[in-house]
Image 1 (cartoon, helix red, strand yellow):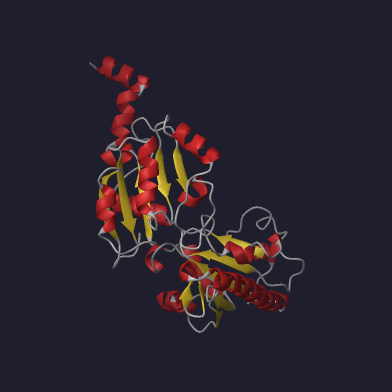
Image 2 (cartoon, one colour):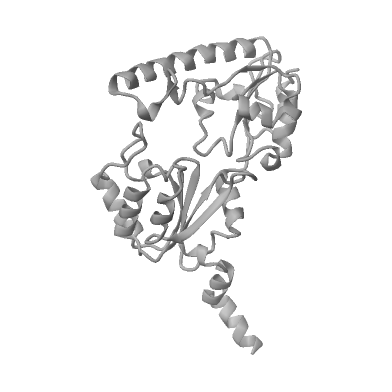
Length: 314
């Protein structure tokens, strides 16, 4: 089923120019962004690409969600089995000794699966890994793609959870009141600590504190990923640098029609609401004055050009 490089669907960059794989009988590895929900939040390009694959890599739940598009294409393996757990225990609950074994096992699994992928590509088979959301924004599928040659990889863009969350909030993030920029980050990146096994936050590094102090002096909007596992500490850190009345919202399971839900509040009030919700992972935290609504109206009110036009009209 593998097509020649010049016939790849909507490939970008050198792939679109036809420089693809080393020979016409070599397969391609497709990193397919499937959106944050099921087929209803996937693009037509993603769904059509699934149908063209010779092999699919996906967990059982995702394979069921896209069964109508996968059809009889074999599911070679679940790319995430053993990536977040060890002997039935989630990585956040492991002892230091188990954590070391977990990392060794994860590296072994990745190497073993990459060998399987390379063998399929060498046979001229196209392999598609189904990645939720936007595969280029905190997408774990990159752990496979970046081990392959760039000319072997084609990325199919997908709608991220941020887009679904904004739709759930019926909000527009820019322009928004006095905001000068949009920040997208995970708390463990923002604080310069790296990802701890239980995703808890320690004290920020001195460099992170300096950056947070600078952020606090500039009006901005923010989207935080993986932000709810240690929400009390995160909110305490944010309130130290930002106003407590700053609007914020948590969107759980963004894009999932059955599980999506929204909690709204401020930096002062939202933590108490979050404490009552058992979900600690599948949620985005959004912060900024844009949540007050009507950001374009606010932008027009501040625009010199719009003010001059209004004066001329009167």
